[in-house]
Image (tube, rainbow, N blue to C red; front, side):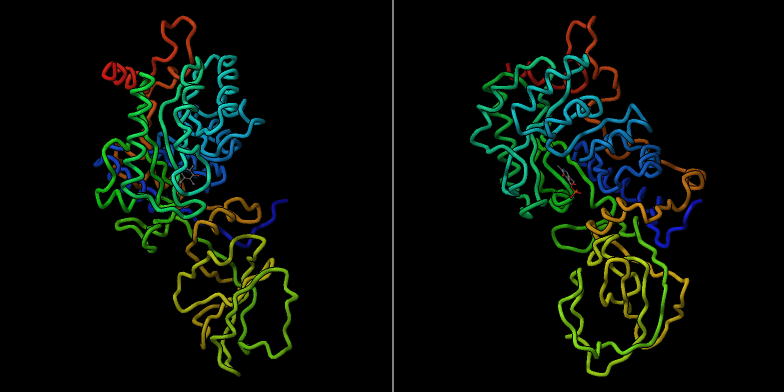
Length: 418
Ligand SMILES: Cc1ncc(COP(=O)(O)O)c(C=O)c1O
């Protein structure tokens, strides 16, 4: 028996394609490669599949299971593992990711051993801490760190990177990007090996990209949120030209009544979940229409739901139910109808991970690809490893184990350094 869920996340393929195409164009204009960060999809295979059909060539995720889902869909897509790997998952990281972000020499040496057994060269980006206070080695330890790992046979350090805006909310600056370029230069000069990639940008750096403030030398971005939600993480609102309706939530109305908006009862702190404190804005005796929705704090980050209809506001929520104020009139709402929300990233992530929520692609993949009469050939997530995935595997017969497209680029650069 299949039970019907009462809430749906709608993934609008037209809007998603529009955002991917737009961001791809920005990247192309600045000669940047980029990887689409899909972790917020929580391995939702139909969407991943659609993204690949839309032309995405490089995907980054922070859950190894999601990379496994991707692998089942398409073995040729370039994969980046974005969370600093735990020792216990390194085997899977080497099996399922082409590139991983790393900050521990012990992990990188273990990756080297595993990659040797799998007959591969695994690509590594060294993450440097530049103020967000999440992952990253301290810049002062970079030389000593690199010295321990640059000569490993089955690990190829393809570049350095950093992360902004995820923990402390650090905003990138031109100075920080310049620092990265300088670190790369120092490493290349001292060790005589090229590091072709500086992977420095996420959605928070897109406003700088649009202002043409990204210094030449930064050549790779990892982009998630702005693609799925259109967000401008610096000035809030949306980035110009991006749509904010790629992903929305529809929730069923399960009760609608005109009620007093003040409780009238003595209240205390007995509720298990924090709720909105809207009493302050409500006049004594004020009444209005309230709708109950079949979604609650167990399902999502309710504060990350933004009613599409600006007349509607969220009054509060408990584990399974959210209450919205509709206003002085019913506005055509009745039970069985839905209320639609735009989503903040936190709300989207929890909804996508939630088994009680349906995920629906609109239009369906088949209809979308029938309708669309032109597709950009050079779209999203340009692969930094080049098109020949087989070259990622070290061929015993090959004269050089590192002659793949990145390595070719880097070998050219190495000649220059020498
Ligand atoms: C390491 C890393 N890179 C890139 C991203 C993408 O960030 P955003 O979704 O803000 O573009 C994230 C977060 O999802 C991340 O953890």
